[in-house]
Amino acid sequence: MKGSLFHELEVGLPAGELWEVYGTLRLAELVVELLPNVVQKFDIVEGDGGVGTVLRLAFPPGMPGSQFSKEKFIKIDNEKRVKEALVVEGGYLDLGFRSFLFRLEIIEKDSNSSIIKSTAEYEIDEEHAANASFVTVAPFATMAETISKYLIEKKTSVMNS
Image (cartoon, rainbow, N blue to C red; front, side, top):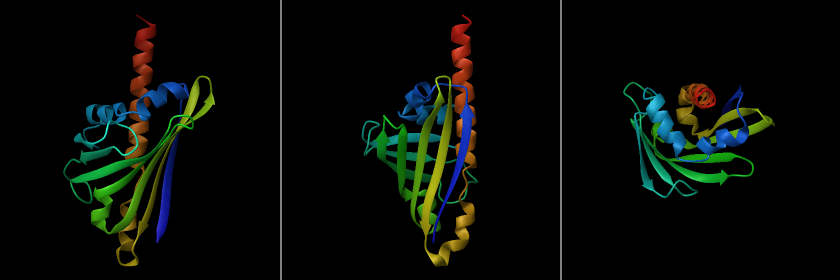
């Protein structure tokens, strides 16, 4: 069984400014800093933030699945502003998923606004099909809202100082 979910959030920031965070390891740093209830900690297992980089994410107690996930960046397209990470160990794989991919896209609306599109694509064996109900884009929605709010506040304080 295959499935996908997505979330879109329109924000009042240029696509380039968002991609400076989303296209780099700064995203993981900010998620840990601003949303410890989503990801408590991250470590770089290998790589420098580019394609092939593997991150180990530690989740807070109470989240479904295992307490960690290893994710490998399989695509980072700086022109189209798309980043894809494949779960390679733990996380959803521990719930019987055959594959699990996250895609983050920054879509330019105009010079001062963008859309953050977060997608989860998965494949799960029939005997574990009930676990598909654990798939949610809520953490991505929270991440998009929190990070964009943080960046807007930071930009506003710089402009006002």
